[in-house]
Length: 456
Ligand SMILES: Cc1ncc(COP(=O)(O)O)c(C=O)c1O
Image 1 (cartoon, helix red, strand yellow):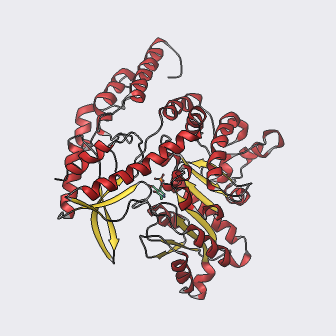
Image 2: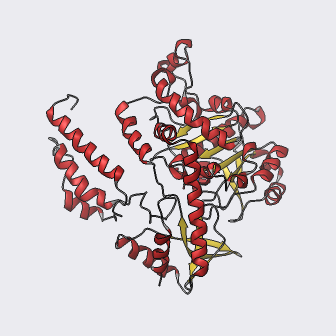
């Protein structure tokens, strides 16, 4: 398996040919899932004692299995938070794999970690955090949020009176599910400010004032959102920062989706206050055009993260030695062994420059505004709320929740588009509505118009 022979070289060329074809393809086919039994019937047993051979396995992958996946970068994939990695970043993902770099410690990964840190410097500069702030790339927003919450909790528990207390955090009901589920991982309770709109300083203060003294003693952090996943809403970050400052609470901003818009000249002012956060999550694999997976966690005081995350072990001692010293990404988040997953972003930034990133993010916002205008003029649909960041919520007049589901499946079945419904709460009532989330700058006005027309 490890020797290089003619067959291996041929296989490598085949794989490269496929990768070149995919990287240069302007509109990949919108695949759809099949049942597991159907896929098994089509491909048979692939993992056998003697192997089925690379050629056969690759053929099955190209002819059957890839067709049962949805390319995240399809211009009419506007569901969830789609993605649209730059071609440069995808190319360099191949190089990252081929280079086999261990990204945990400088001693082994210095050259790769150097590149990651160059990209990170730019990311940190977008936040406006004070000098000394820094971060690391994680597997995604969930891991970034968890890393921040562990850091905040460990910092709080340094005070002897907190050592044995179960922690409590406050966030809003519009916050991403990962905040609530990572709170379970660290066994802390979550209280919600009940709003899908912006969490304001007033609402947060009211929530804090409503706590009993025992709850107040357990409260150690507030998580604000810099772009809700459902509707692109940005909390009152400045007001929340002031409350956290007065109340001596850790302020984490989950900008996993919206953080890319810090690069946008149009949207940057909406994030006023983010520069006062203690920690910020931004996912380059969402709106900064990196391939999966690439999240990031940034800390105002990285030393606190190091105290919380740095792992000890006899076989790891060499990494702390003077001769090996340098920046060790594993010290600042939950993962030890790691891929240098920031490398594709670095290469793409180095190749294209940061201005093109600002332009591409602006496109997402402009597409959302364009969609808003098309919806206003269309007789069958209406806006549920004004577009926010790159999210648009709209209703098809007269439709039931089932109509939205059928419409989604029909468009997907026909290989036309993937646009899914969501729910939005207004005046205490949830309504099923349609949702666009724009990331891909290659989505066109015609794409949007055709999707709206498919609701006829
Ligand atoms: C605001 C927000 N936070 C966290 C996450 C979780 O990120 P990931 O899926 O990369 O773990 C998401 C994902 O959509 C998100 O939108």
